[in-house]
Length: 106
Image (cartoon, rainbow, N blue to C red; front, side):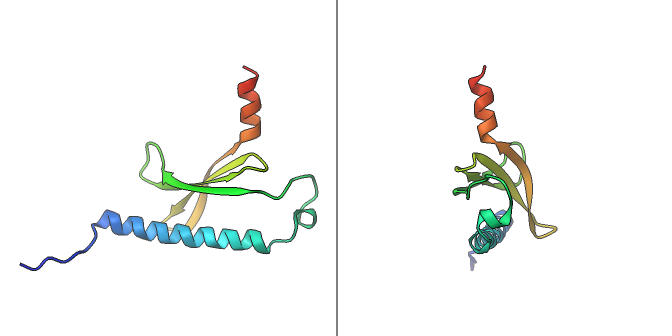
């Protein structure tokens, strides 16, 4: 009997999602690196961000997600890859500074 080492459908799908997510993150990183300085890009006092990216599963759903945390501006964005449209979509946003101020005021 000859066995082939083919990944299960779920593993293949996850691998494709991870490849697409990495491509999307690479494009986003290039866009940030090639964008004009913030003083030219928009008026106001928003500082250039310091980003951390974390991947994981969403609670109660079957989709994986990417959490993008901007430590400088205290913001968090949650993205997921839409397989049918082949794009990253925003599924959540939090102003961490505002959340912290609310919890301190309790």
